[in-house]
Length: 140
Length: 114
Image 1 (spheres, each protein chain N blue to C red):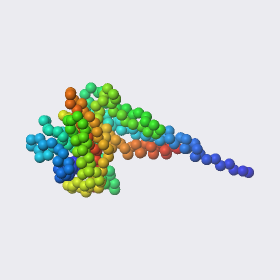
Image 2 (image 1 turned 180 degrees about the horizontal axis):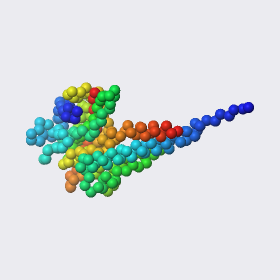
Image 3 (image 1 turned 45 degrees about the horizontal axis):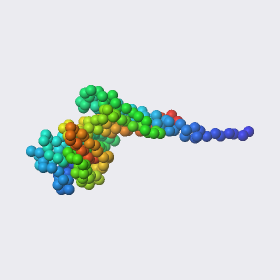
Image 4 (image 1 turned 90 degrees about the horizontal axis):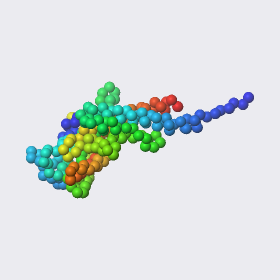
């Protein structure tokens, strides 16, 4: 399911101007500053990282009844404040929480916010700011 | 001849919270075990500092937390969520997702003994 969910999330984010308008110019070879798992080297800030954090299946009547995946979608910025990253995170939340994505081969049963993801990453004299959320994607 | 009826309800009520706490703790320990296995399986163990600091701690009546790291081993969230140069290697959230049903089972098991 992961690839299909990743595609659905990516399409949703890239189709949301309120999200894409807040991002930096994409790295070479990319159309948007929205990257799966890891940004390419020398990416401009801010950008979005999305990644599957876990996946479980629930069986019922001898078959898989539904799939639940937890996806992290976070903005990463190198800045003295978290304002830009938090603004992107809010725009992403508006697009995803209780929203819809298209998942090839499955039916979306639910898409909702699970928890916030907020932390600072000090590195030398720089601070990277990670702000986003975990989302549960439930499929049948 | 008079019959005397006595209720066990006060006794059951008194033992409820400690037993539920016991069940929740067992469930939390399963989550911690799975988190340790996840760290190993996703290649995140180098010094062993973090894996040795995944602990279950009491957070109140019938409430237990799985804590990864401490003030010196402070980077668990960066392993879980990734950094500017490293991808996420989630270990705690998958453990919780995988074992949350087991927590409920553990609590049910101790309640059956009442």
